[in-house]
Length: 136
Image (cartoon, rainbow, N blue to C red; front, top):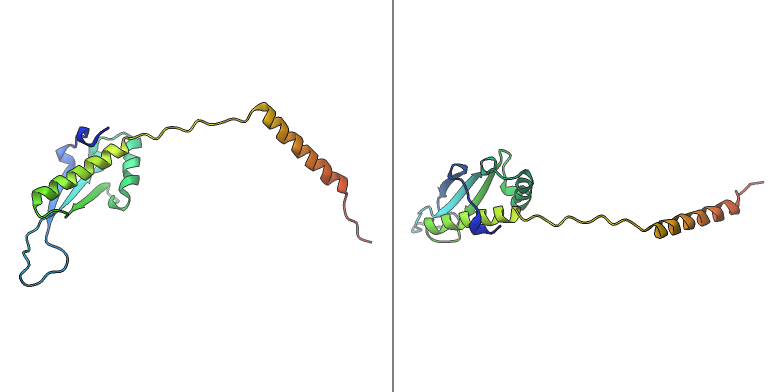
């Protein structure tokens, strides 16, 4: 799945704009350009496996209430930051839908298993041949 194929329901999103953060002084423009996107993961309607992978990808950005917080403050305008947050969300959802290839379990051949059993028996015979140490 590609990020541009991801459909995000609008009722799962809520946006808020954060006031300017970081160092500032008297003459700093305090326009709120940073965007915080809150996504209700339960409303996305993801498959349970994709939901678990999304939680692993997002890590500490997921709250106990099942909300994913994405903060975008890379750009100087609200609209650019809003698009950046949505793009990052789409990338996370697309990455969560990538299924890792299942590892095929390998079984040892009968010959290999027989060799291991034989070696075990040989070690056992050596230990039994030693006998017990007796103190006078």
